[in-house]
Image (cartoon, rainbow, N blue to C red; front, side):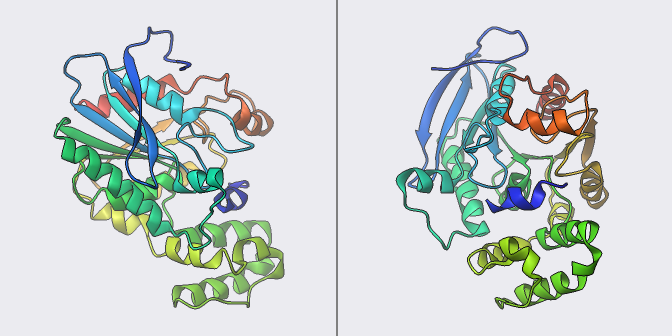
Length: 308
């Protein structure tokens, strides 16, 4: 999970495992915040729609950021749509703000939930799909978990954390420097009370800066284990054994909190859904290697679950 702290701060190329193109693409604007791409299988009857919610940071509909070009989310959507499942993927709202040079300094985690709900409501109102599935990747797993309470038929956590973000950060800080644990916990105690704080380890200024604290405060109120425990729709929890950001132990926490969920571990899959045969250097480099294919086992597991 080494890159996790940094990563939270923050016409058509088809790769479908050797199959022919079997879907059409259409860009959609859901509202002033949400723009995305709908892939519709050419199958006459394709009643399942998977809404894919991207990871943390200024992540676009393809899974990319300025210095991270891998097209993982685009490849995921295309892989599913080539298996007769419609997909919609969208830019995080901050992507649009950055492009317009109008970044809202007060953006909150709840804004991401509102965006997900807007997408769900849009497609629900179309009365076109008999099944709507949420696939949340990384931070998107938690966004999707909150949004899946209504109007959703299935939920999939893909590399989602099992702990609230404050506990994720505390665990990582403790692993890096145990002497910072106490001060970090005290800082988060203040945030839990809704109070901004200046009492935090100075080495962690990028996490606890005044402009970041409100966002962290809005994020940490959601506990994935509590949320998934109360989710009553069919649930799939997926993680890869070579995920540098969200280890398998996080998926286990979700599984243990959701007694009826399906639990799948993809051997050698990393956080951006690629199969990594080598060690950490290859893994890290792959985040910016768009030539790679995403895991075919992952596509198979998702399709099998959604078609049940």
